[in-house]
Length: 149
Image (cartoon, rainbow, N blue to C red; front, side):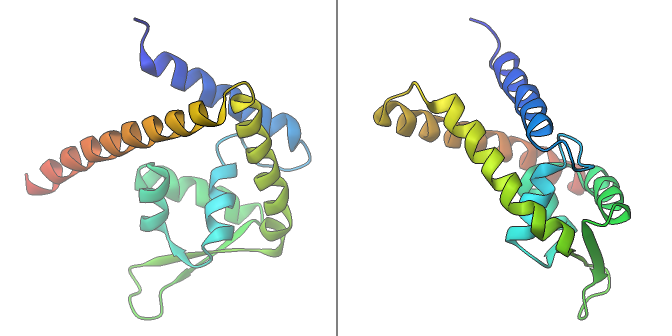
């Protein structure tokens, strides 16, 4: 049996190329679309919560947000109650781009799932959710070990 990661990684890389081809006018790299997606859907999200939602470590999230801020897509502000928390807000540039990002992500999902029956789609999504939850639990266990050491 071939490695699960082989297929997941290929789909992920192809998805990035697809998004880049469909959104050529923006300065976004293939992996920054997900930031625009989550920040526009959750204005004021903390960097920490964003990191948890997209399963990317905090330093990489901080680095990408710096680029997005420099390019005018987001604004970061300290939380008014806890200055250690950094909140992220979309700019008008990101808000204007969001419908295109959403459309392209939807197109990609529809393209990949087009040949599956409704039952197969439902089963596939259920299986992916189970695998995702298992993966998140695995890194949560590792992170808690790190904290306790």
